[in-house]
Length: 130
Image (tube, rainbow, N blue to C red; front, top):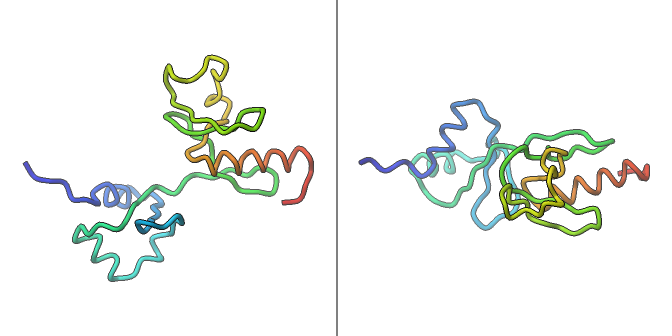
């Protein structure tokens, strides 16, 4: 059986026309593919490690800010009404009191996105400038 190329998912996403971003191993920032050098592309094609890829998260406007859109399924993170950061498992481990969090658009792919959403909503409600 053939072994799949280490970056096969990247190639599938690219072929499907997705807006793909990359991250160098050890970095926190995500970059557009336009930032890749020719040498980086060669490394990707040869299967070199050192890269992580993702589809660029969709965004939504909240007031005058642009935030990552909430996720519609699967695990993620949310901020409670009391300001606690919690994980969303999307299964029986979630408290019954949090039922519907994902349906109400309160679950995000990262804790940073959940915090940014909370800040944007607070700024909108208190009419604070961004």
